Image (cartoon, rainbow, N blue to C red; front, side):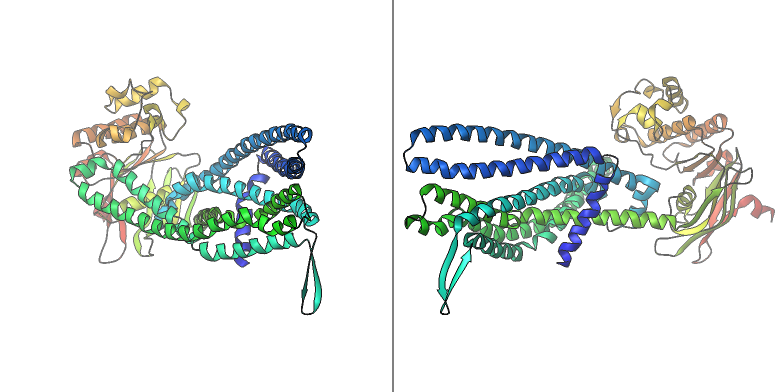
Length: 581
């Protein structure tokens, strides 16, 4: 019972926000319409059940006029039932896509807000494969929740309607036991309940292992798919290193988890199907076994026997809802667990960000960016580097260098506000825009115009601005391809991608520009030309560069080095100040 209560609480927490959100009126209207159609379907079933008694009585009595009349009545009932079935599916799918759209927007907003997606990946969060949870689990949750809710609602209404009919048809069951006479009113209802209760218990004992197996299967499938995508995205590097056999072995190893777990599902499903298939076959004949003695004794006519058998089947089917839906319930439970885990992970990550000891405050001086008393730590808590003070004046060019692994890129992440481990103060001028260019630029799939304008809206820049920026950074051949769609990260070389990123900076004109080895794929002459271009086009922009080449020194007014003594954290040293001392 605790598990059921916990599951229902999770489902309520996942579902109710939609029906209280901005789309609530449309969602509620569609839900009410779908429920009304479910009521209509049950009502049609009741009419068909009553029709059964009259139809088979007419056959038994060889009453041809009544037979023809009942055929016309059946055609009328069937037409209504067909209309109800069509619109029930249509409106249910309509509600499903609106609900899924709302949940997708909610989850995407939460996942992408305040760099939550990066923080979750950084800490190796337990919410694995968020892409699968947003793309697949939401769809599965919405469709399965609606299906199970409507199925349960239909089962309850069918049970209520046909239990009354069956109670009236079954009469009392009299027998003698322990020297007394006993009477069981509505015995067929109790027989249907007992039959379904035993079946439900057995199905649960056999199939409960499917919940964990389905959860693991989704995880293994997602891990395997992610690795396939990584091979596709890094195909050139793998081909150059002739890493095909290694990748094949690694992918087959990943796929081995999929196959091994699927075998577990197959075995569990086979055991469950042995029972449910046998249960279903017996359910077809069981009502007539129960009612047959009364018919052969002459107590009831054929029509009443058929009506009673049909009503018994409906009642027993309603009681057996959980048996028939057990596989779906197991899958649904695993989907609910994954979505609840994802929501919890997002909330925890965002709460941790709010409690971060890195404080971003408005700058009070002339410098657009200032860092004070910053200590950057690794995820395991070890101190990586200390920065007592760092000021960037408008138009100043500062080069940050140091040994590999000293924490240069991590320092930029902390200044940009996406590194959560450590403490310190980052002061940014009000309304100042900080732009960071990583070593490997991100180029979204789509038009070149979109890749160049990213992350700003397309309409923010005109065609002439875009073409001029491309020509300025040495990509004139791309100036006429703005509306061409392509996977630009694969089409362009590393150097061309870095040139494109610099073109972005020319368009944005940030107050602070941080370059994390953003020109490392270029030759020294091209690199120097781009730095001169930045100086000419962005004279008021404060620039902080990370680089290892000595030729970069002449492109900057000041050089700062991260140096480490012993096993302690690296410290930021201003070479000009150090040489003066």
